[in-house]
Image 1 (cartoon, one colour):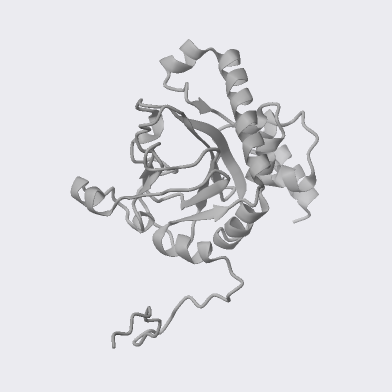
Image 2: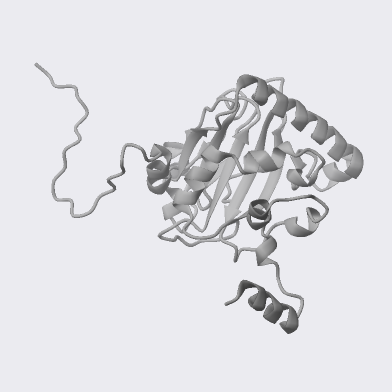
Length: 274
């Protein structure tokens, strides 16, 4: 009789990851292969509502900045710093509890929201995110712990047909971009339901696929970094008119702005009392 059970015993192992059953399995998966899909916990009605808010915000953003002007700089499918628009839901999505639990375990110490951009993969058209990249672009190093994580909130279902995200598993452990042959043999396309987060180590190579449907596939991309990596857009300045909690201000990087002078630096040290 053939035993078809998955082997779990090991030998010759001096160290191993032994997580309690209560630990989110996404954490181990992110450490080993660099990506995982987690559930946001939003209800179906909340997921639909977020999609409607995304659509309204996209229309307002294009109206403000001009479709032709955005298209001329290849920005028509992106909403930069979407949380700085008028809808409070986007800050809530960035601070989602299920997502925070994963980021808290993977980035040691303090981290901030570096960027949050709305991304649309248009139907039957190439777009800016369809090329392989890291979310710390132009960097070729590896680290023992993540310096940054990115999380794609799926506004719509991610499928094979609509260009769901491709990843190169474990490429966050490789300094160089791999060969075309390696990509063809090892690339994986992720399917994920609307309301999910696709969480990636920021050094993992990934890209969007070709959307072969008649509908756009939308997402909200977040980048969480250690505070020493500068934000794409100065979120504390952009959000300065908002009423924010202490936790929200810390998350947005209010505590890590560049002092304007030596006096400003010393004043900040006095306030922190160290």
